[in-house]
Image 1 (cartoon, rainbow, N blue to C red):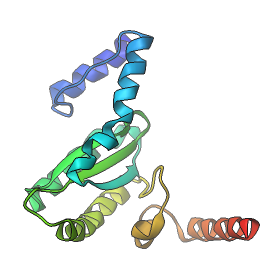
Image 2 (image 1 turned 30 degrees about the horizontal axis):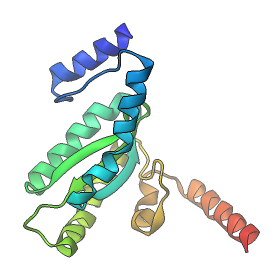
Image 3 (image 1 turned 30 degrees about the vertical axis):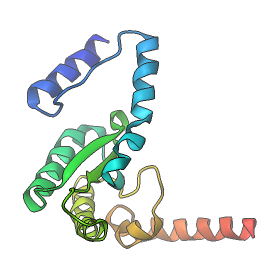
Image 4 (image 1 turned 120 degrees about the vertical axis):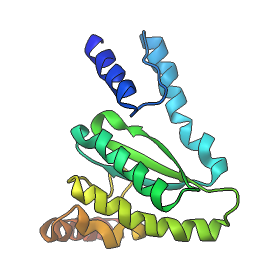
Length: 166
C-alpha cells in the first residue's frame, strides 16, 4: 500500500493526475470500482468518441501526455476523458463532443484524430485494440501494432470461428 501511495503521489506531483483517491479498505475499493463502472454511462451525454488502446505500463504517463498534447494542439475544443485499466496499460480514450459541433462533423474529425492516436500507439509499441476488438474502424490501422504474420494468424482464427458458428 505504501508503494502504491508513493507512486500515486509522484503522479500528482508530475501533474499526470489532477485529482484522485486511493481506497483504504476492501469496501472502499468495491465502491470505487462501482464508480469506475459507471464512467461510460456518465459521459454518454457528451457523445464521446471512444477508443481502446494499450501501451506498456511504463509508457502510460508519457503516452497520455502526448495524446493530450496532440488533441489540445490540433483540436482545442475537444475534451479528453481517460479511464480504463491503467495499471495494466489498457486505456479508454474518450473524446467528448463540443456543444457547438454537429455529431457528424465531430465523428469525422475524430477519424483524423485516430491516425494520430494509432501512430502514437505504434511509437510506444502498444496495441491499437486492447479490449474491445478491431472492428471496421481500426482494421486499416492493425498493421500499426501487429506484424503481417500476426494479422494472417488472426484472419485464420476468424475464419475458423466463422466456420464453427455457421
